[in-house]
Length: 370
Image (cartoon, rainbow, N blue to C red):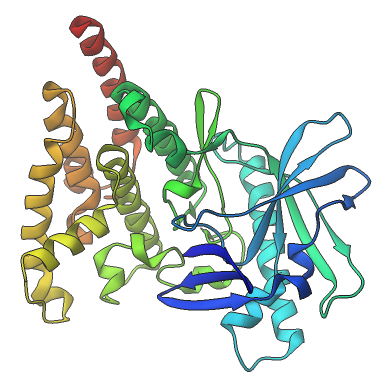
């Protein structure tokens, strides 16, 4: 999803379609100067970059507490629900927004109760009513303020060494494994949702995650994340028959795609799609029939991706992780030792350990080189 300002207010590109909103009549876009819950002073709106991705259903703000510490506020925008769901009543839109707000809040609390440590949590919540708007009520969630998402660092990749990238990826793998341990699947793991806090990386935006313990519309969907990052079985509408297995298989793919992005600045889905287009490969629209072509493209992409890894002795190890995680056939996805055992193919413990070991191995290689 792309988001940008224009003379009409803002425009969104969501699932290939462009939508415009006049922000003057939308309460969620006009919170600057308000004090929320007698605690949070709204200082400025954080507009997304034109080329960026991020939430469509919310507006982001920088807020300060009474001690002038900065925090991040996510304001839910009912007009976005209305824009994407034509023909419903205001009560329907309000219910959809309320459900989304309460689900993200409950899921954050659930993760905290189960000692998940690598996720950005909700620290306060509430709603404000602003007069003069068609729909005056704005629910909001407050989070700790990150230094930024990982794209800001990787855009200056000439100064980011491989050891730092592997350290960050290890944090993210830990986060996803922690979520899987409590039957939560993120489903929307992408660069804009990787938040940096000094030396630590955390996963943000649980709003489209699935959770076996909490009812949600997302539990009934084969995929709830950004389609531009989705694995190919989802794009072909051929998910695994076991929905929980598919959720975990998707998170594996998204983690591998994230490693790809850290190395090459592009997702695995985009790389394979670009390869197919440039090589004029004709696909038939059937996942089983097209799978050999997808795997051929995948293997070629992996081979080229290896050359982007700056330390030659690390290339095979890192590319193997990507190969295991992003395998186009979801039944073969995962670590080979997991596939050959009785456990889940999509268990991430081996990947967590591998990323940790590779970080230390890379630091030693860098020291020797210097």
